[in-house]
Every structure is written in structure tokens, then in C-alpha cells.
Length: 118
Picture 1: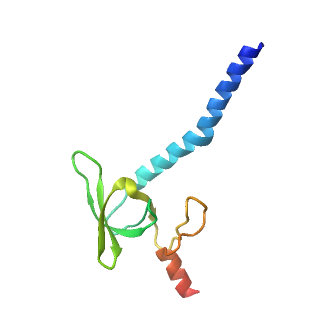
Picture 2: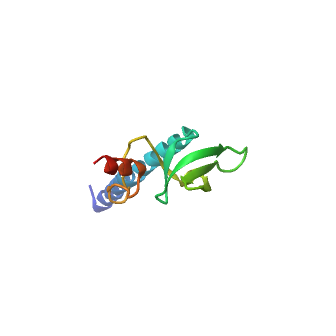
Picture 3: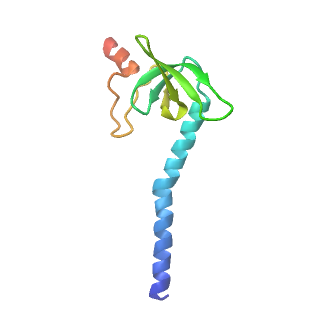
């Protein structure tokens, strides 16, 4: 093998490693998020990409354009949002963790009920 062949093999290996380490997990996360959004029903508690917890009040699926979701944040605060603004669905009693550092999200309803109990 000469230097050119070794260089070409190294470039191919770097591209494959980049795909496996960065792109593939990101694609899987997007697919999981889209699946979760399709399964949303009225009454589900969700975490937005902004870090707010809300309850799904209505879901609008127009013939064209993005899916719109009406979220109720409590105390009369109701917001229209695009489906892409939903980071994840929160199960009852589930503690929400930050994607950035893995710590529990402050003010999550699940954590609040745990704090009251403890």
C-alpha cells in the first residue's frame, strides 16, 4: 500500500466514524421525537424545547403546513405552538431531565410532587 491509498482509507474511516458518532444518533432522536409527537393526545403533559411544561389542550392537523398544538401552562396561560416545539412527552410521575447536563429540570411537576412528599 502506498501513502495515497492509506490516506484514502483514513478519510473513509473518518467519514464513517463521524456518521456513527454524530449523525446516526441525531437521526434516531429526531425519528423518536416525530413518533412521540404523532402519538400525542389531548391531556398529555409535554416538555417544550424551551423547557416549559404544559398540557396538550388541542391538536390541529391542517391539510398543508405544520401540525399546531395548543398548550395550557396553567393559570390561564394558553399558547399555540408548532409540533416541533415539543421536546418530549412526560409520563405521569416522571422526572424530566435536561438534555444539556442530565440534571432534573427545576419546576417539573413530577419533581414538585416528589418534593411535597419528601
